[in-house]
Image (tube, rainbow, N blue to C red; front, side, top):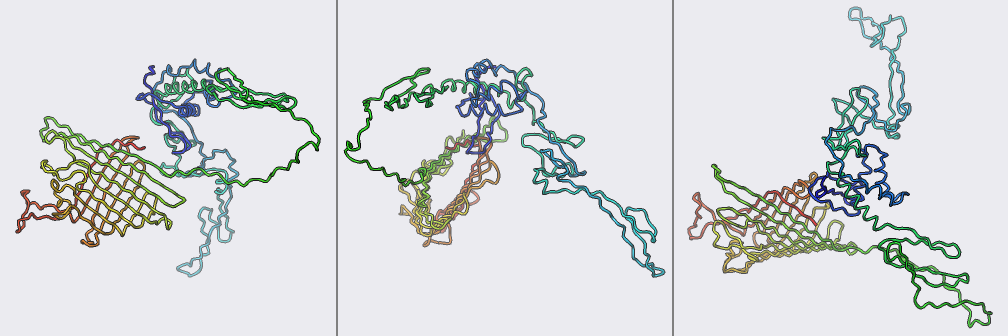
Length: 630
């Protein structure tokens, strides 16, 4: 089996998802790049997957286990055993689903059973009692005589004469102690209409109840990959898993060989031992004090410069002075006892991390190709690039937060008839500073700028430029409050907001198309701004993001609210590809559009000017997207 191509196994380690490592099936699409940690996790997964091994006591499995945990067997013995194994030469074949596990059922009646994994005695939770049922007397009146009938009605007994005493029926009742079941860890299930409640299904396995209804059997789903009976393996998770195992073992063997260490004990003359590890690749020296019987000491530096080598270096400027006894009168002064009071110490805290950065990009493509198509149409190819960068400063002690984002959303369309065109262009900067004042409500100051980067035309007329960089551009400053009821939902209200829409190049750009009066370059407004951001996931792999920006001018028709609403829906297909739907709605009563008649000509008013009205602007884009997040 060639080893030029082999599977990549990706694992989600602890801290991000769960305590168990999630492994994807092997393939031969990429070359595996195992780090030490991923190679260790991969071999550990192989060792602890019981269905992988034909025998749970196989010597190869034991060797892998000792390789992972450095057991008492020397590394040389483990290495000599594993280097003789070549897992890539083992032929893997497809097989039918395999029985992996079973659960014994204890039926109480036709529709109720227990799952007792501990094998407890039924006397602990089941009690049987005999219930006596006495017949009831019929005290109704005879219709003809009016005399009580005084007869006995027996539901399930022999009919006795009125003079005889009633004979009771007996019924055997089984009582279940539910508190005992809970204490013993026994689960009670019901079986109705072929369904078990609560369910006994196990994710990733198929189940089936036996004909005698005494056990539930579990099988591997779909086809399985099996190794020959001559190998130590039984059921594999993929056709090329043994190739990946071989590469992971080689990775750990090479690393362990380079980092193999030996413990050396350094003894002094009194028998005291000091540990010293000989590690390959460790060029640091360690300090030891060497003393004689008179307690004289000098410093020796002990190092490990190379494998199987030890270096000894004497401390520089060593001066040996011997102590001698002197009379008390010979001492120049008496020594004072040192201050032995404990010094106050404070608890060490980790340095806070104030800044957090995120970068995400989505590249979407759509393509249509037609040739000799009798129904008509045109080949086209469109792309859209959406890049969003975010920088967040969060100071919990000061209760302040500063969030700044920059976004570029640019799309193109190419057709054989019209050539290359721009069909989407958005460049915006959003910066917001919050101060938490009242729990979920805080003061907020915001800055928002909306722009484009390339020239725009009102197709099919591509000779007149209607927009370009900073023409037009919208700048908004706001001061107010922000309410955050949920984790991914914010409501920002700025009663004091300033909005400026400007066109710098009025020579080539018609500013009236963007709501600016003729003979002016800008339109300035004071009003209220409301910004709502919401992001939800109704179910796994589906994300819906809403961004709503509302603005009402105090002086110019405050009842007419400017609306800028964008909805982004992402349906994840796999790790990289998603289906993205982007809807963008803009309504601004200052931006007017000409009214056209049935022939497509502009309607002219009596004063000679074209008739214009306010219209909602709408844009929709859907396609297959390639998504990256950092």
